[in-house]
Figure 1 (cartoon, rainbow, N blue to C red):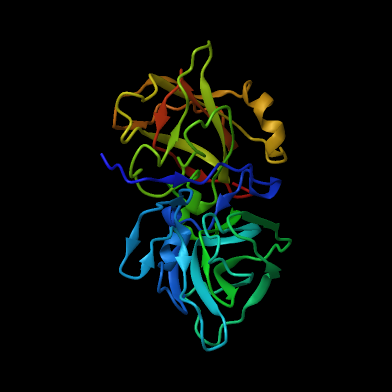
Figure 2: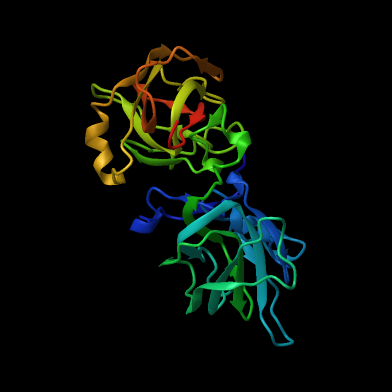
Length: 343
C-alpha cells in the first residue's frame, strides 16, 4: 500500500443548476481532450477526470510539481493559453464549474469559456465559437460555479485562460440532446443511457459518491457506480431515473461489477408516465408507482438480465430503481422501444 502523503479536495454542495444534471465534460462519460496551446506541467486530459482533484505534497515529475489538472508553463511572450475539449455527447449546458483546487500560486487570474456545434468532427480554424461564460476573475483553490442561460446544443468547449496557469477540473453541467428520429434507435434502445439523455435525478443515499449507473461501459471499480452506506434501519435504498425518451421498457440489465461483499441482496423497479413532473416532485409519488420488475435476487460481480417485466404499464418516462436493503450497483440498463406520437 502506498504511503505517499495525499490531500483530497473537500466536498462541496453544488448549486441548483448542477443537481440532476450530468457533467458533459466528464472523461468517464466520453469527453475528450482535443487540443491545447500548452501542457508543459500537466496534460489537458486530467482536467476532465471524473473524480475530485487530489494533491500530493511530495510528488514531482520531470517537468516539476505534479498537479492534478491542466497546467501550462509561464508565458514569456505575451498572449494567452487555451484548450479545446469534445463533450461526452451533444447537449445543452446549464452551468459551468472552473475548479482551481490546489492551484494556489499558479492559477490563471481570469478565464472565459466558449462553445461550438460541430457534429461531424472536431472544430477547425473556421469554426464559429459562441461565448458561454464571459471573462471572469478566478481565485486560487476554489470552485467557480456559473449558471448558463442558453438553450442551444453544443459539441465542444474552448477554455481560454489569461495569461497562463492551471485549472484542476472543468465541469459542464447539462443534458444530452439526442436525435430520436434516427431509425437505428427505434428498437431495443437503452432508454436510460447517459449518452442518450438519461439522468439520475434523485436518490435517498449516495454515501460513496454521486450515482454513475447510467454511464457507458462497465464500471472500472467500485467508485464507478452507485454505493450506499450500510443500512442500520428498516427499509431499502433507491434512486430515480428520468428516461432519455418516453418508451416501453422490455428488458432490464443490472450489473454489480466489482461489488463482491457489498452488492444488494435484491432489486426491483417501479415505473410511471409523468412527463410534466419536476425532479423535486418525484420522490414522494415514486413510492406509489406500479411495479415493472418484481423483487429479484442479485449476486456478486455479475451481469443480471431480466425480461419478465410487467406488460400492462405501457409507456413510461421515469423509473424508481430499488436496491434491497442497501449496497452497490455498477450499471443499470433499460432497453425498449422509444415512443413516437401516433404509435
